[in-house]
Image (cartoon, rainbow, N blue to C red; front, side, top):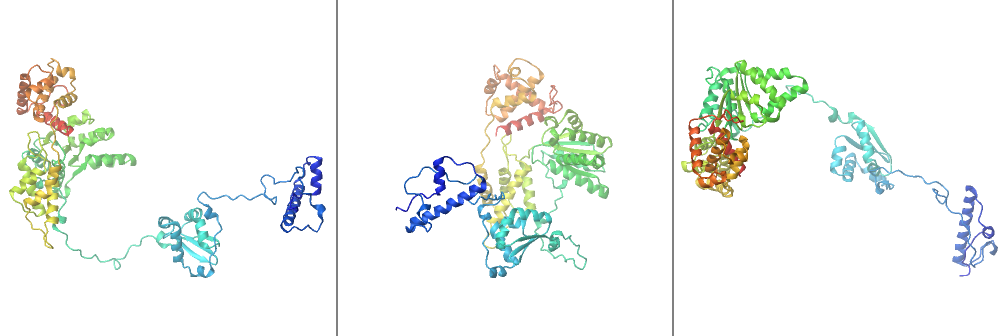
Length: 588
C-alpha cells in the first residue's frame, strides 16, 4: 500500500519543522480543522482506489515517517462543528424511554380511537391505581387533529397531571401536542350539591322480611334481667333501692361497686339508670357514662371553652352512674373535675353510683381526696359466682336462645365455662359462661343439622362435649403459687420490709402481713405448716397455726384494717380476697 500514508498540508509540515505554532484565533483554528479533515478524506479515497488526486502528488506528503505535527483539536465544551452542545434537563420522574421521541401512529388509528379507548390505553400505561386516583371521574381525553386534549375538573389537577403524566400523554398523542383545559362544568358529579327529593320523588320504603327473634331483642339493660345469687345479692338489692326515686336510700346517696371483670358491675349500673328513668317517666334525669367518656367530654369542653355546659350536663342529673373509675388513675385534671362534680351531686341530694375493678384503696394513683369521697358511701364487692348462680345463668341464656337442655347438660356447661377458685371449686365469670353458651349454640345449630332440616331445640351432652371438650383439654390448669411469691406480694402491698417480716418485731402491720401470708399460702400453695414456717423464717409451725386461726376469726367478725397503710378502712376479708386474687393472676 504505497499510496497509504499520513497526509498533511505542506505548510503544516514546514511549520512543524520550524517549531510549535503560534496561538491562533478561534476562527482560524476552525478553518484549519476543516482543511485537515478534507485532506484526511482524500487520503482515505486514495488508499481505497490507489489513484492519485487531480491536484498532483505535491499535495500529498511522502510515505516515510514525518516529524510530529500539530493537529488542531476540539475546544472544551464544543462539538466537531464548533457549536456549543445544548443541555437537556430531564424531569426527575422521566426515564430515557420517556425522553425518546414518540413514535407517531397512523392517522387511521387515531381516528378510530374514542375517548373511552384513550382512557383505556392510558390506564394500561400508568396502571389501574394511578388511573383511579388521578383520572377516573375527574379527567377526560379527546383527540384533536394530531394532538390530545385533556379536560380536567380543577386547575389544581392540571398542574398535577402535567408534571406527573406529560410524557405518557405525549406518547399517547402520537407526537402531537397535549392541551390541558380546566372545565369544572364537564364534571357535574364532582361539584354538584345533593338535591333533596320531593315527596313525590322519594322512594317508597320496601317491606323487609321479619328478622329472627334473637335479632329483635331489646338491647336495654334492666335490673330484672340480672341473675341474682349469694355472691351478688347485696349489690343487686343496693342498686335496686338507690335507683328507685320513690323510696329514700337507706344507706346514703353513694354506692361503690368493685370486683373482677365479667361479674355484673356494668349491668347493674346501666340497669339502675334505666330503672330510674322508667319510674320517673319523661322527667327522669339518670345518666350512665364510662370514665373514658367523661374524660373525653371534659377535654373537648376545655378545647372549645364550653366547660359550663359540660358541668351542667353532669351536675344537673338526679342519678349519675359512672363506670370504670380506675381509668382516672393517671388523669389529674379529670380527677379534680370529677371530685367537684361528686361534691355538687351529693350536696344537692342527688344519687351517685360508681364501679371499679378494685377497691378504691387499691387503685394506685386515684388520689387520697377522691378515695376518701368514695369510701364515705356504701362499698360492696361482687364475688365470683358460685355453682348455683352459674347454673341459673346457663338456664337463662338457654331460654333466651330458645334452647332446651337437661340438668346434666346445664351442669356441664356451667363447669366448662369456669375457673378454679381458692377452694378448688370452679367459679368463672358471667362472660366465661356466655362464651361457653355461644360455642354450644353454634355447634348445635351448625353441626346438629340433619340434611336440610335444622337441628332440634334440645341440646345433647354429645354436642356439649364436642363444643367444649377440646377447649377444656387444651386449657392448662394453673399451678400452685410459691410461698416466696406470696411473701413478696403481701410485703410489697403493705409496705413491710423483708428484714421486718423475718425479724422478731411485733408491729401491727408486720403481724398482719405474717397472718395474711400464712392464710394465703394455705389457700394457694401446696405447702404444709412446717414448710410455710420455714419459708417465713419462723422457728416452729405453731405460730403459723395461731396466725391462721386469728385472721380467720377477724374475717368472721368483719374487722376492718387499721394498721396505718393504704388498706385502712377495708375489712380483713376484702384485703385477703384482693391479695389472693392478685397473686393467683400473677402466678398464671
